[in-house]
Length: 287
Image (tube, rainbow, N blue to C red; front, side, top):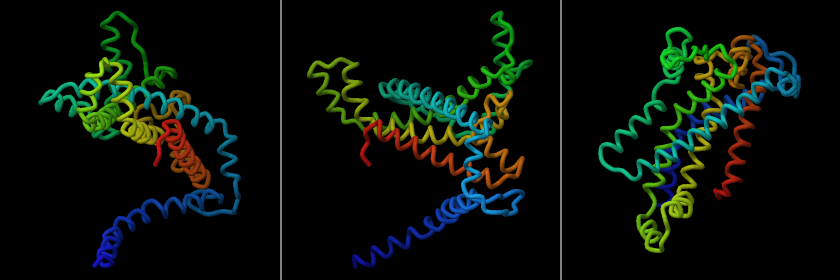
């Protein structure tokens, strides 16, 4: 009977395993294979070994795109986690319809289409008719062409990515806070702990898993996000917001250099794995 149950359990996992192999494992292996060949216009050329990887490292535009990606990713993730934590702690002290309403409002940016979000903010940052410049001019200041200013465009990209992910961080951290046993909080108050001591000695250590998971998810999401940068700024001005996924997109569908694009995709994957490993190491989290 036990053996039949085990076999039946394995059978249930077959459909999901086939989808995983078809849409993840096979494309990954094929991308790794293409990265070692000269692959242009979907035509396989000669074997080039690590030449595509070396070219990715020595090309200034690609190196710059990695730097921009790291800056945008870590800045937006840090803002999202911090504000998500603050909102989660605030909502945790409230109950009823108001708390549910705030959670729903916070999740809207995360669930709506990234294309819609990017277009929305692009229109709002419009130099002539955008709401941002209308408010700036009403306050007596000169308007700013956000999309055409290098520094302003980078700040705008960080802002939009943060705006999109704060709600996710808030809900994940709030779930961790709701899982804390109330008796621990009551015991800390009985022992004379104030609100700050309760926060740093009980609440934050207890929600470490939720914070770590949110940080990993948002880092990977922001690091590999090419939709928002593509729609919001298009990588401009002067490649100021040309993140590495945009560079990969251009290599594939603008220049049709699929060999180099595959090598860059492998490098992106390696970077995300290293970042996740560093997070787990720093947080001293045991899997």
